[in-house]
Length: 130
Image (cartoon, rainbow, N blue to C red; front, side):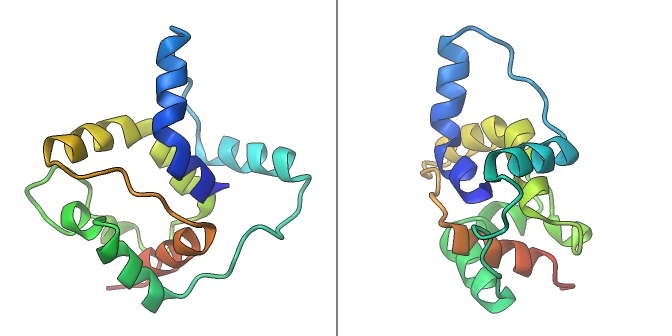
């Protein structure tokens, strides 16, 4: 779910804007509840992540170009190691993704599409102490 939401976020924001509705806030717990409802409680769709691959994806998908720099306005994610999950990623994306997209566009970067495996790998990487 996290990868699908991430990859389609820009279209979701456009749909919300076109409908002229206020974007609701989603907490980590609400994201978990939503996932449980949509998946019927199944974990079959959640691949196991590998931190080494996650570091490669984090760099290749340009995440590091903002989140490991101090002058970009993006939060340094290392301070939250051990706190990341698919649900926290969905919640953070929904709350802060539009600002992230604006900064990416200003830097002439494209929104990155992530597979479920890539998202699991990034989460595994972010949860390692650096």
